[in-house]
Image (cartoon, rainbow, N blue to C red; front, side, top):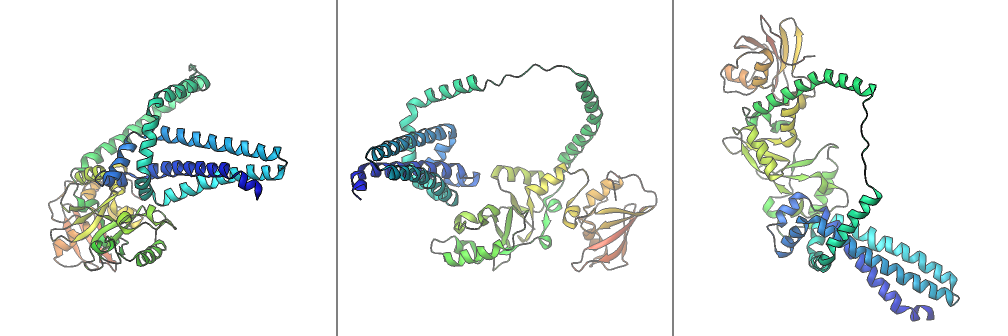
Length: 442
């Protein structure tokens, strides 16, 4: 006990240094864990939030300052620890000196790295706002020496890792590879042509033609309206319980969860699955993102532009009555651009929508887009209001399709083979003189 009392000033100084090291570690993790959406929202927030965004605009300066101060604090901490341990050993307390060295290392790892960074990852936005003022002061304090530190770092990198590139030698294997690449170049050009055609085709498609329709969506109902859950006095326990139930139903490959209003049952928001990690109790105002709406008739290319500008993964499609009829995600649009054969119906049904059934006969799913069907058969698309095969049959019959119903669409003859419980038909398409399609059918 006497030894601890005598060493109290040293131990207190070490405690202050370990707290300072934890401060810089937490600040680093919190700042650089903020996502694009957090930074965009904080740019329009209060003075602290705007200061966070300004510091992150020069991330190299911020990181260099944090690492400099963290290294300085850690060196001072271990210097004091070593001096104190040597002092104890000289007084005959060798066991206590060894225990102090081990405890100093363990304390630094836990209190300066593990604990603060874990807390920062769980609540990055809160800690970034809390720590930004002292962090900004620390950054300004080292501004005069940062250019010198950067020059030293570049000099060390060029001396130790010069990264000299050896001169290439032409070998027989290089000639063989050149021949192989020339053979593969034709296939690559064909793929590029398909992508370019799909890009042009994207400006002709409407949002309703690339969307995931509402009946095919797996949606979840919010515990209350957005206005209620965004309120400061919203019941945190109820929100936590709802999140717990939601985590049990997340698909492994899902990037977000679509949410509907409990009263109107309209699509109103989504939650990125990053906020559904167990132990991450993010408040509703940070986790729930109000969804953006686009009309059903907007061009798919404009939807892609809007999603890229807003950095949103998804938007909702509404009809002329303002009802949400589906969603369009960036993944849907990328599939429409880069897929050489697949369409929306292939992805939803997990099979090819157009399949050869015999000479001059094909089986086509009702969700198949009419534009795609016309491209497949190499015909001009006959005029119609409908977008899909199922819609065309309803348009011609003026009722829901039934097994055995028939109609014509240009040179093609449709006959309904079966109807699913949701009313989506499987259609037999007959063409007397078929021409090779643009897609390989199974």
